[in-house]
Amino acid sequence: MTVRRFPILAALALLSSPALAAAADAPAPASATPPAPAPAAAAPAPATPAPVPAPSAPASSVPAHTPHDQTPDQVETHIATLHQQLGITPAQEQPWGAFAQLMRDNAERFRDSIAQRRDRLSSMSAADNMQSYADLVTQRAQDLQALNMAFRTLYNGFTDIQKKQADTLFRQSDQHAATPAK
Image 1 (cartoon, one colour):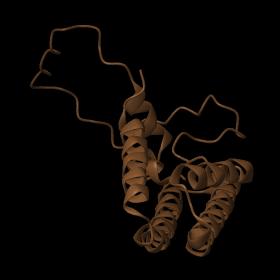
Image 2 (spheres, rainbow, N blue to C red):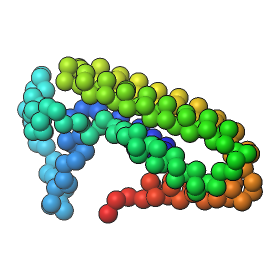
Image 3 (cartoon, one colour):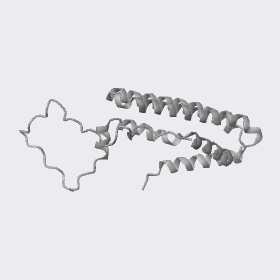
Image 4 (cartoon, rainbow, N blue to C red):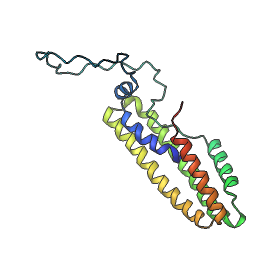
């Protein structure tokens, strides 16, 4: 499930232009001394911004601010693993089936949305790019809300042991996702 990616996606919205992404990735100056203040008679800033250098990556590469999708096989593996970890019983198969199908549908919609965005990226203006990303994140949030409702139905039918297992499993997953990479 890609639930843990949502906060990352929201943060990446701030980096929706190559110029911002490059600025965010720029290393801090090596000098520990602060820069000298500008002289009082400094030249005014130019009326037009400096040109942004062309990206060095090939046109077919996906920008860092476009989220990645899961393959259908990855989704199925996740569903099977979650089914086993939660100990779904035969009596819980109906709500489980609805939940699992919603995971598949959401993943497919997300893959399609990302593919459409990738196809249009080269012709998008910066404003269109930001709107496209906002639309993608909005759709993802709506899908996660629907998935949450299906999971609540399933969770409400769990035994106390299954609830504790689910709580632990989801907590660990969130803690892992929140741990910075080393």
